[in-house]
Each structure stands twice: as structure tokens, then as C-alpha cells.
Image (cartoon, rainbow, N blue to C red; front, top):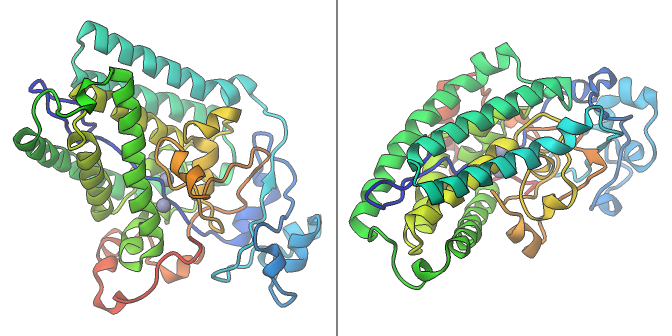
Length: 390
Ligand SMILES: [Zn+2]
Ligand SMILES: [Zn+2]
């Protein structure tokens, strides 16, 4: 399901996944003190960027301005987590010491080094890119899944049998099929329009230069699409599917509406990987790196990588994109464009208080698969707004 270059030298479409998010669970669900795992400490409210603009009439504003009490957390949680649309307060939860430091600090670097080592081996030994991409994808999912179980961040955000089977699995299954079809379509277009070795000046750059360019170009296109998908109602209704789970765990990286996949994995990838003139090997390497980021970034695990967050999107930054009361971190693999356009969010000492949609009641129940798929096409929705928190 990932798209490596073909023997003919053309670029296939890959599992380029966008960021996404905005779920909404009940306040009590999100604030249950017993649910704090993996070094997550006592919830403390914070009034973020628009704190000064809130008024005394805003529910929960008092809670947000001072250290929250146990009573406020456990008995008045609803007041502390107002669901008002447009409410610009996020009550972050501070995190303490890592309980399993090796898994917390070592998982992402290990996967990154292992992936780069395999890419170097593929370039120098001529390994089959299709097989390498498939095996790397499988290996990454296995490692992240195991680490997620061994070192979870919050129990409330864990994958459960019920959530996977009755809510997310239909979307995941459909995404796998749609990706395969889009890969074939992208390959067909590339075969007819792109020379086997790439074209233009970019194809003459060293491989590492082409890979870096591919990552920057892909993320610029993705950033533009993704941010638009959060602000333009017609696209947001498709993209909101990715934000509908109130929990973010590894397999959520495949929860998408097929139309969202079409824009993100066909249009963006085809433009960035095929029409820029980079070589198929450069496109393959860039796609593998993007796939790694996309999988790691959805882990419900206590992952901390410090300065690496400023170079690569990961668990800590993409989790904030899935915050119910925040928006930011629209990038897919590298946070460059978020930093350029002022939407980069990195808070090393806390995690979002709530994940998912800001107001789930405004959206179809994601457990109703067919209704969720059809909802964005409803004529009654034409002209309605997008993701207000964006
Ligand atoms: Zn998004
Ligand atoms: Zn996401």
C-alpha cells in the first residue's frame, strides 16, 4: 500500500498521510484523574493564546486562570472543558518523568536510524523498493503498536477492540483499497508524463538533495491542502473524518474519508513526487520517511524527542493537531512550513486535555460508517462553515 518507484523508473503513489484531528469526548472522559498514565501528572488548566479575550461569562474561565482543584477536575469537569465552539482555551495536562525512559526517548530515534539504514542499503544494494517499502511499513507498525501497549500515554486514548472493530476498521479497510487504486492511477499518469530518470535540473542534484527537496515540496503542498481543509467547509467535512476519533492511536493514521485520500495522496504526491523532476529513488526515499512520520505521529505513547520536534513531525507535535481545542501543526513530515507560517505548536511539558472534534454533536457518529461517508455530500451542508478552531 505504499508507493515505491517501479522498475520502469516511475514513481508510485504512497501512503502519504496528512495530519488531522479534532475529536471530542465527554469532559469527564477526558479528565478522569485515574486515566493519567505514563508520567502524566495532575491536570492543570491553562489559558492559552486567547485567554485575555475571554470574559467572565465564559464557562470554565475561572478554572482556566488558576491551578485547578481536585474538585474542579473531578466534579466540575464540564465547566472546565467548555464545548463552546470558538472557545480558545485548552486545559493542558502537565507530564512528569517518563516511566519507561528507554521507550519514551529511544523508540522514535531507533525507528528513524533503522529506516535510514535500510534506505542506504536499498540505494547501494539495489533491493526491490516495493518489498522494502512494504516491509518497512509492516515493521514500523509492529514496533509502534508494541511500544504503544508497553508505554501508553493515556488509557482513555488506547485502542480497544470496540473502537477498532466498530468504529475505525471500516475506514481503515476502505483506505487500504483506495490507496491501492490511487497508486495505480498515479503510476499510470507518471508513466505517461514523467521520464524514467526524472527530468530537469532537480534530477541532476545529489540524491540527498533531491530527497530534501521532495520532503519540502510535498509538505508545502500538503500544508496548503491541509490548512485549507480545516478552514473551507467543503473540504473540512471530508477531513473531519480523520479528526472524529476521540482517541489517537497508531491505526488512526489510516482513518480517512476516501475523498481526503484522493486529494492528499494522489494530487499532492503526484505533483510533488512526479512533476518536480526528481528521480524515482529520491521519491521512494522521501515517501518512506513520510510514511514513518505518519505512523509514529499517531501513537498513544509517551514519546519525547526534544529538538528533533523542530526537524521532523512526530508524536508530540501531531498530537496537538488532534487536540479538540487547538489547531496547528498542519505539516506532514517536517514542521518547516508550520514554523514559517506561525502554526507550529510544541509544548514539551504538557499534553492536550482533550482530543477529537470540538463539538461531535455537529458531526455524524463515526460508528455509522455509511452515513459518515455520505454526510459531506449532503446538499443541506452546502455553504456551511469549516473547522472554526483552525
Ligand atoms: Zn487535520
Ligand atoms: Zn492525524
